[in-house]
Each structure stands twice: as C-alpha cells, then as structure tokens.
View 1 (spheres, helix red, strand yellow):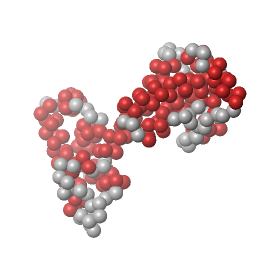
View 2: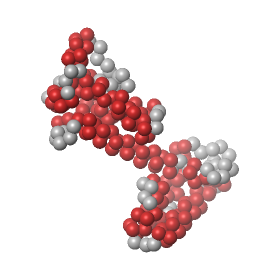
View 3: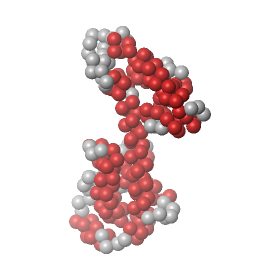
View 4: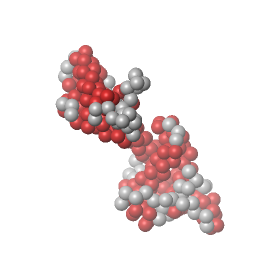
Length: 227
C-alpha cells in the first residue's frame, strides 16, 4: 500500500475518478516532499484536516500515512485478507479525500474515516454474498455429483453459473424471489421475516424451504445437461 499518498491526488486524477475511472496514486519522490512530510508529522489530525480541506495535499498525505495500516487491518478483518484489500483501501482514501469539502467536523477524522471504511466493507460484503448466492455452489455443495455442466459434460464457468441462477430466479414468483434474497443474501432472520410478512415463524420457514426447492427445480436442467 506504499503507493497511496495524498500529495499525488492531482485534480485531473480526481476528475477521472468522478468519471468512474480509478486513478493511479503514485508515490511522491521529490526531496522537498520528505521535508514537508517531516513537518506534517508533528501536527494533530484536526490541523492536518484543516490544511487538507484548504487544498494542502501533503497534509492529506500525512493523514493517509498515519491511518493506512489501521484501515488495512480493519478491512482485512471484515472481508478477509487478499489482493482486493489494497484496492478497497485505496478506494476508501480516495472517497474520503473527495468528500473533505462536505465534512461537517461533527466527528473526528478517524471516526469519519472508519465510518467510510465500514460502509465500503458492507457494500463489498453484500457483493460477495451476491456472488456466492449466484455461484450455484451453495445449492449443490451437499452432493458433489451434482455439479452444473454443459450438455457435453464440461463444467459451467462461474459467470455462466451466475447467469443460470439469475435466470432461474427470474422464473420464480416475485414473493419467492423476495424471500430468497432477504434470507440468503441479506441474511434476515426468520423472526424478522415473520414480522415483515406478518405470518408465524413456522410459516416463514416452510416458505423458505419451498422457495429453495423451487429454485433447485429451476436449476436442475443444468445438472442434467438439458439447458
């Protein structure tokens, strides 16, 4: 993560990020930058934040250096350690930088940074749950012989499995889709689902079981090679 520095978040790169193209944040190697960084190191977060809001990128650079390791550990503890952690941490710091003008100062910089990090991790967890839900594996892991495949016997690629599950979901009644999504992806408890749909918990459990069976039936052609 040494490539993340605030002092190189140039305006052109920020504009590219707003246009949905992630900037490359390179390390500033100018000798004078080292002197500025040393001076910045004695300032508290509030002072650095003031300077960063006023456009002094070395101040934001110091905040990044100060909290980068902590954010890395936080993200890793939530989503698991992997190559995607570095990308997420970079996104988090870029988002914080872009939102500095809107920062109301009703919380410390660290609290705001951790809030942004946790929210971004929640988004990533939701995406991971969706990918896992639509991967096919969870539905047929109990029987290794039941693996989705093409008619010729070749296994479906992950993207093909996700497409198959999405197609099968679309063929389910709307309420069945809703139940599966809330239970399997959002992990809403049976108790909460019973309250949402105003039925007994036993009824919800039965509906979820039937919904899973219904989805399994829709997916069976891929198991039998009849797609």
